[in-house]
Amino acid sequence: MRILQALFFPPEQPGGVSSMIPYIQERFNKIGWPMELFSLPKRVRGKGQEEIVFETFDPKAFEGHPIVDKYLQTYKDYVWWTKLRMTKRFDLIHAHHPIAGLVMKQLYPDTPLAMTIHSSYERELILNGKIEEGSPEHRFLTSIYRELEVKADKILTVSDSFRQYLKPYMEDVDRIKVIPNGFDEKRFKPISHENEVVQLITVCRLVPAKGLDILLHACADLKRKGHPFVLHIIGDGPIRPELEQLALQLDLYDDIIFYGYMLHPEEFMPFFDVFVLPSRAEAFGSVFAEAALCWLALIGTNVGGIAEQIDDGVNGLLVPPEDPAALSEALEKVITDPVFRYNMARHAWNKAKKVYSLQRVISQLKQVYVELKPES
Image (cartoon, rainbow, N blue to C red; front, side, top):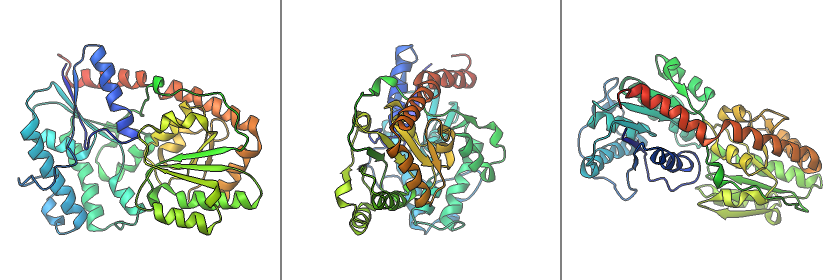
């Protein structure tokens, strides 16, 4: 069976799809199922001109809003690029972004399409203050889910909580199969170490949705209580200047290191003690599983896929979102009790190896692919 993995942009960013799809490709190729990757280069802008026609709603009704217009132009660019560069035929296409999925079904209607919805662009935009709930942009982006439901032969997503999130926008979410992300264990090499001062780490894009302002306020509270720590922030994004300024205001300048973007943070993580990320929303939260495989204690918010990965008090600690006091208390627990911290990290590693193995993902995907194309 020849399979195409249709991505949005090239898999060169850390986390989520990029941390998984190239390794899935490698495993399938080894077992004799040829698999290729296809994506839209970031340099392709403004090339597509074809009119877009959807079956379940009229996208023209939402034109005139910058985010919608950019989305539609990217769709047209994906059509243009696919027609230009796709020279092979595949037995099955597995898409990992709504644009990729809808374009592939438009151009290759007779090829079975599996579609994994990894996250909600509209929810991220709302949390990042770019759009308002119920706005035309929000209604456009959520209408895409129904279009996917009609066009895709099989819909997948990464967590039970995200499947429930989709319920208002689809007619039958019970059709959706949940396949949590999986990770190649060979990438993660836990290192036995003892840090005199507890080292906290977070890895994310620096945007409001990740709740790093909450983390800094929690760290300021820790410092006032006299608990030493160092916070390492890996990632970049539009609010980095604001976060750096907040760190100065909270007297945390000497306790935080901003690293910027890093291609393979998993090579760095094993030297730290605690992974913490107080996201305001998260469909899955791949970085938690990655941190667990690096043998770190986990602290996250009780939202989305994070709450499915962390069993509170066993392999990590869950706190409410938007609650710096609760986050500070959780951090205090792991900083002041190294045995508790070690045991949580051990349980996190055990669960991640068992539940988030790449081999489990390969097995589940093979089943989906055979169901969609049984004769191959």
